[in-house]
Image (cartoon, rainbow, N blue to C red; front, side, top):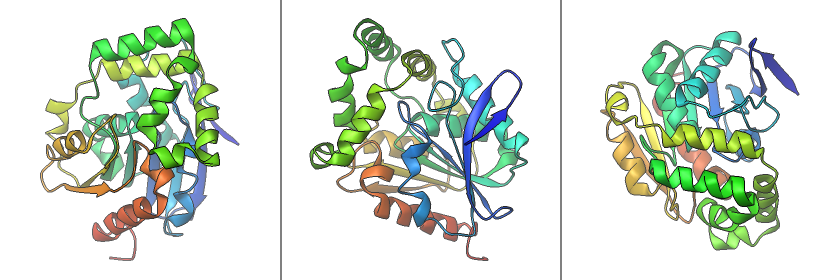
Length: 265
């Protein structure tokens, strides 16, 4: 267990791979934590210096009072990378993690050399949708949204598995205030104009069964960035790094090799 003390905030993070190697940063989805990438990390090249972190309000990181702004979530990752002296990283962001990735790339392009925008969008949902979801959570708890959330996260067969049950338990044990505060950050975010200014290698990944950020939304978002590429993971929901880790890892490893981040190119 490693905590970064940033003064007003402590963030839990883990490092894997080779210290000083090409950095890869993994940013998780709403309602999950850094364990989202448990199945992915062993599939990545050993030469990478991998950082994964629990965002504020999630996992073992602090959960200061909300609501949060997306700018605060972006700054958290910015400060952690500065704290750890990570530069020229490829940032993989899933869902809200992909929104944070877009924001950080616009703000601090010096930190990044590539993006993987996974199951995300420049804008996700509407303000009213998120406010209604937060109101339901505060009134009735995670049990009221668990079934619908898991349907967006995973295909039916995976939901019925023992691993699917474990992810349901993880969702139910979230910090409600932290989750709601991050949901409010999503509600207030529209990155269409700023993401269109980006000029760096970008891969978009979508799940064919993802109703939360459908493939067309992911494609529309990455198409804002000239030269980006798009890939679809078949039979995957909102979190393909969990239910289709082999296919997901193959896409990321291919992208890292193509842009010369691994493999000595």
